[in-house]
Image 1 (cartoon, rainbow, N blue to C red):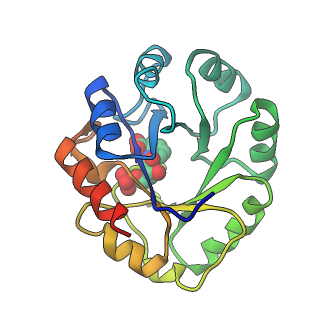
Image 2 (spheres, rainbow, N blue to C red):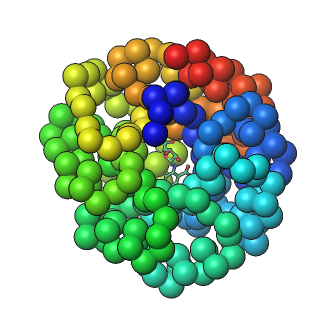
Image 3 (cartoon, rainbow, N blue to C red):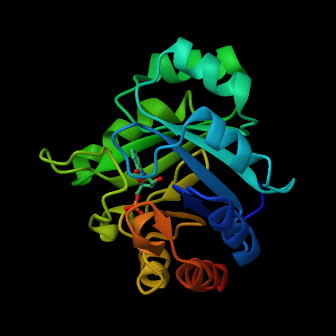
Length: 215
Ligand SMILES: O=C(O)c1ccccc1N[C@@H]1O[C@H](COP(=O)(O)O)[C@@H](O)[C@H]1O
């Protein structure tokens, strides 16, 4: 993987949002399969949206503690390039999913303090990529997509053997600072480019991608 800055826009829910994300220059587009999320898609909706994504843009399915039956159904119906596991999946479960489906797997790890970064090591051995996200507060309804960031200084001086992506509370206004502080070469955004929960804003997507791709 080259060191070119890559951007993922997650939680797309309409044909127009997919078109806008692609034309803004997103490298990855994410579809959420988690019924409690305002960005949740049915398999039929996701199949339609995925069919509009050109080759070269990575289609990511975000799932939360999904079992084999749910993943079997998802992957039978939606042409997905990468799985993002955003729940409490153990390293063993990550390895199992990767072997069963033969797709690259990105495991999300929630970070609130330096100790949380220790959890990351166990996943480096089994995942293709790590998504470093803000740990959700105990009261949160969603395990991600809350628009919350963590102390980016925790990432300074860290080097890992696998590609990783920074997420959590990124916006067009703060993504440059986040990249400068963390050294991230991949960034992921959802709520920071929305007009309202689940509704993406095309100008904010363009501004975000352009700010990140400037690095
Ligand atoms: O976006 C969601 O609804 C969601 C639901 C369940 C798990 C994760 C979810 N989103 C992911 O969370 C991070 C950060 O999002 P944000 O930019 O802070 O809104 C990102 O990876 C989203 O894909």
